[in-house]
Length: 322
Image 1 (tube, rainbow, N blue to C red):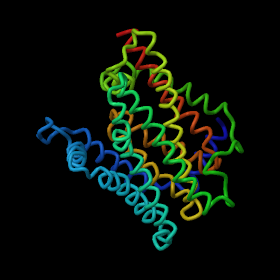
Image 2: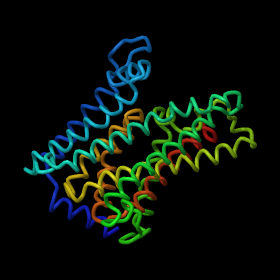
Image 3: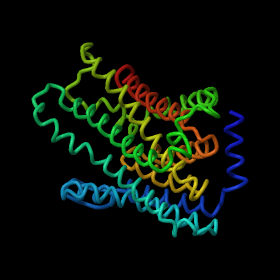
Image 4: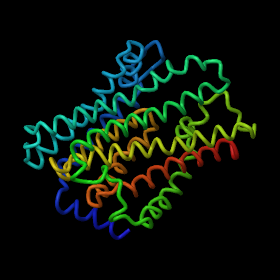
């Protein structure tokens, strides 16, 4: 734990800017307002502005464009204020910076809409009893495979000789601090597991209407889903703390951390507000650790561990102590 505290202190001494952090907090507050404040009547009931935009894009088949804007805007806003407060605009004239921004946002945006293609692939299996579960399983595998393959191609041709595959190294890694972080999160997740908005979203398996968890034969579906659910967060950690930090370090150094956290905040836009807010601070912390350690192994353990604990906490609260 001492090493992680040291990373935080070093970042604060060398790179932290109160101005940049304040703007990030204002962005967080504004984003929460447009996402959670329901004030627009529509055909789907009273909705927030962001939710209404999402429905419009979904029905008009502008899903990919919507996600490009949703992810690309906060990234560029983050880098703009980073340059402003650190008085360093050199990255804006660097073609590699623009390529990485466009490439990363395009890859992640396509990942976000890939499930729509999965629905088409599975049309021949539409009579399968657990088709909703199957769509989720295949979607998780497809998203992870696409993300890893896309980023691996860039790494192979651009960074293979410079660094390991964006944080996949156990150098500078120790298990104990990350277990302590998980232990700290355990009581917080326990409290969250009693809250209505949390239980409305978790456990994720509650969305599978074809599965009855009082039926023991359905637990194999639950086990496979939860395994792949954790692996989905594995790929998320790789993209944000691996690619979005470590692929950018040669251009912007530690200034990659907060813009990454902007986008990481935004991908939680359909989550409970408490989870969205904590994602910014948690994403920033894991970004600092990834930057100084050059490893994402610990971050993967924390991220996947929290995801599974949230599922387990909600499952216990909902099905064992309703």
